[in-house]
Every structure is written in structure tokens, then in C-alpha cells.
Image 1 (cartoon, one colour):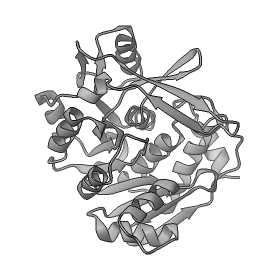
Image 2 (cartoon, rainbow, N blue to C red):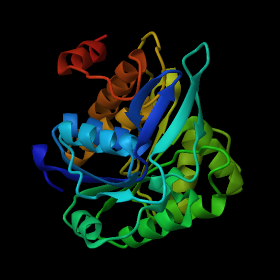
Image 3 (tube, rainbow, N blue to C red):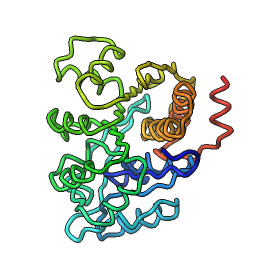
Length: 298
């Protein structure tokens, strides 16, 4: 694995606009992960598709301005750029209405995407992009590449099946769940266990993944790494909204682990980054390193 700031990452999946009432913010879990990894010093490319419309042009312009490689974001003449209507409850937790079909459902395989993944250290992918056969088939091809594979589980009803989730887990070296997702999937796989720790062990046994992390909202996260479980109990913050907090958590965790940080330090850092994102509105707020250090010192 590359050390320091030379880590090359590729994120695959949805790029879209999160619509909060009258306001639109750039989003999509893989893009959120990619943008945060970029701010942490990684070289990042995004593989996706937008429509040939104003929303698509605006996404390309914004992604470019934020320093991501965009030559692997293709443009569809037949499908519109993705939009998601986000509704926040009184605690800032989000529910999503995800338009279908969108351009990111139709990511076609091309040489640029294949070459980009072949040169990368890590490929990050989610489950939502597999709701359509076109994007799923492209991902299956890219998963044949010899690269470290990180599966970010994102259960959005009705856009998933346990059969496809199982296939995606079998391809992964590292899987990230939230607590509800872990318990739901483990139960569907007939786990006899109730605790998060036991179910993490169950998933490791049943899949090819060597590492797993589970986020627990305000209660922090658990990390299974090289046979040991590490824990962070969360940081006290006032939540603005939870959109993108798990994505930034994953970006910080993967960047730290693949740069050979100690696992405890990595999960502490990742939880601090995720908390600061939850404290600010939208998925991709700017965060200063001093803010992360201050929160970790609490």
C-alpha cells in the first residue's frame, strides 16, 4: 500500500443532487467519500454518469473545482442527472426519495474506468448503484481488478436484495455497515447472534472480508481489524443533520488505515470527522484539522 499522501483511490457509484426543500447540495455516498478522501490528501477519481443537462454540467464543474478527476464521469443523452429529495426529522436524521432511472443507474464500462481502477490502491463502492443491471454489471467487471476493495453498505428500501448484497460482500476486503444494516443483513444470513460484536465475527466468517466497521450514530463505531475489535464511543456534538456523516467517517477511516495508522487512532480520527460533518448542514462541509484535533482531545 502507498504511504502518506500518495494513496490513489477510486469511488464508483452515484453522483447526484441532494434536494433539501428549495436548496440543492452535491451528494451521493461514493462522491461524498471521494470528496472527503481528497481533503485528506488522497488522489481520487470518481466513476459515474450524469445527464446531458444543467444539473449534470454543474456536478462536473463542482467536482472538477474540488480537485477530483472527472474523465471517468460519463454523460448520458437518455437519462437525467440524479436527484434525491431529502427529508430531515426533528433529530436531523434523513429519509431519501431517490429518482429512478437516473444517469448513474446506467454507468457503462469503458477503458478509462478500467485503467483508472487498475492503477488505484483502493476501490470504494456501495450497494445503491446495483439497483440497475447496467451499473451493477459494470461494477462486477471492475471488481475483478486486483485492488483493495471497500464495500460501503447503503440500504435504501426498496433498492436492494440480499442476494446481491451477499455477492458484493464476497468481493470486498473491507465492509462498512451502520448498526441497523449489520443486524438486518446478519439476520437475513441466519445469524444466531444478537450483539454487534458477535455479528461482525459472523460476517467475517461468512464472507471474504478481512475487516469490518460498524457505525453506531452518536455512540461512535466498532472496527474489526486484523483479528481485534477497536471501539470509539462517540463525541458530544449537536447534530444539524446526519447526511454524509457516515461517508466522511469511512473516508477518514480508510485513508488512515491504508496509511498504516494504528487502528485505535484511525477509528478515533474517523469518528471525530463523522461527528463534525453531522454538526454542520449538508454532506460535505469544510473541516479544519484543528477542529478534528480539538474534538479528539475532549
